[in-house]
Image (cartoon, rainbow, N blue to C red; front, side, top):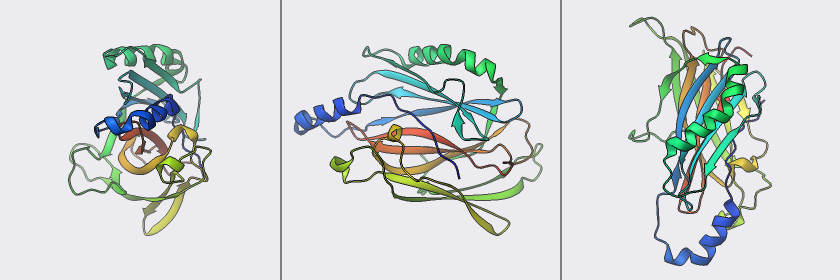
Length: 249
């Protein structure tokens, strides 16, 4: 089984301390919901790159982070992640994104991230009646031809050990496991043994989408992107992790 990676570069303790001192005077706000952009794959489908970006809660600073993952080992390569936070209020998020891309450019070129990543199943933030704990998909064909294959993924969410002190947020953060069902066979393809500190004090996980390389006709390089919701300064914060879920390993 494999280990998921995601990093959020935040001075979390600083903002938590401010919340403890001034919390009674702050209104309940929405927190920080990062947005996702699939940058693409390497030509052979082995490497996958994505970006998350937004405005940080508490500080109002624009940030952007680029991740480059070897899907065969589920590990970062090329010096990733590349993280930018512009510590000037009201800076457009586009400026942080441009800076992150400039820092990641050499690695994206080295690993030939030139093949577009296609969303073959997505869960929009405004979709009604969806708990985000399951997603089903197949592999698109040409035009209106039938979708091939049927893959069903389900999340199991549980308390897991971490070196983060989450007692203020009701104890241990939540870990995640992913089950895949196809052709009547169910297998566990990922399980946290501990929660990485980069995820902070996790509340829950939800499916965001499934991505596949452009012009791919099988499930070998499919990636599941999960929204990771954790406790933040003004409310729940969202970041993303990407898990290899293909059957080509």
